[in-house]
Length: 344
Image (cartoon, rainbow, N blue to C red; front, top):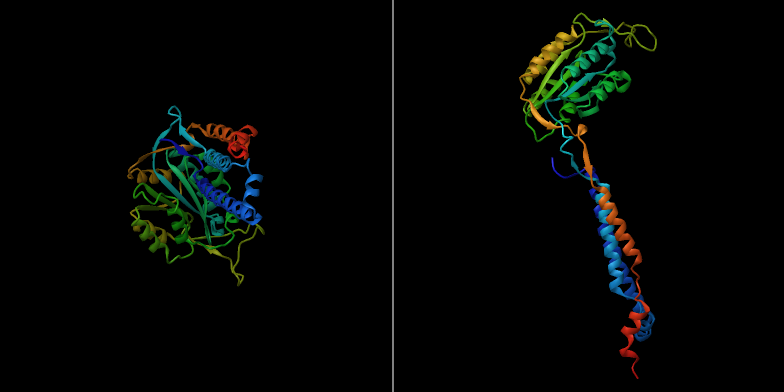
């Protein structure tokens, strides 16, 4: 990796130089108009005999260069230290975790959601060289964490996931798949996989179509089913009682395996029903092992040499010079310049 800027998003600040130029030209125009408005040209020349437009322009040039160097310093130019470069080989995995209230069912004790979290943690421990992203979904999908090799931070996000993270209830699998696909680099056509973990309870008619579209983009979707086809009740955490519908009937949530299998088939992925976390992780690892692995620089583990201080130092020198330069000529140069006019 060569020379780069850490904060490229601040490049727009260079646009302020154009504003400075416009203001500078506006001041020059205002000065000319003011001189004409005064009237007597000889009197005006005598009054501003010591003024130097060249010095005034020089001050502006120094100020503009100082501003440009300040912007470059803010963007933090840097180069990776060759000693600190870490190259890993791995794949990019987007984990889409269902956090709807049906995942609180206890047919997979202690609950579907807790077992899903255990599965994700074991998967990350078994695949340390892979970048992981986390998407949480229920009635809406949210990007919880972009692609990272910092599995420690990823586990914190996973452990805190719950129904409260997505207030809108439901199971929008199609939206979760789209959000998961967005974490990948669009220019790369390989090495992408989504691990969808859900009970698939709510029928999302767009899910299979979305999966087919993502297959065309080189995304493999592997699905993990949580729960049992027989179903279970949902304990409301607020009341401690079984959740009921509007008619007062106890809600039974069932694993919808057919939908999850159909999604996996669309992308040549596999469907795994989670019963033993160790077995499920092993099966998924075997599936992912078929994907070509790529090398990528782990920026989070790199040591960089930053050069912003050099730009700051030159910026301050230019500002100092700009401050020292006067807009008026010195008395000596003024007398010298006016000598021919003073002959008698």
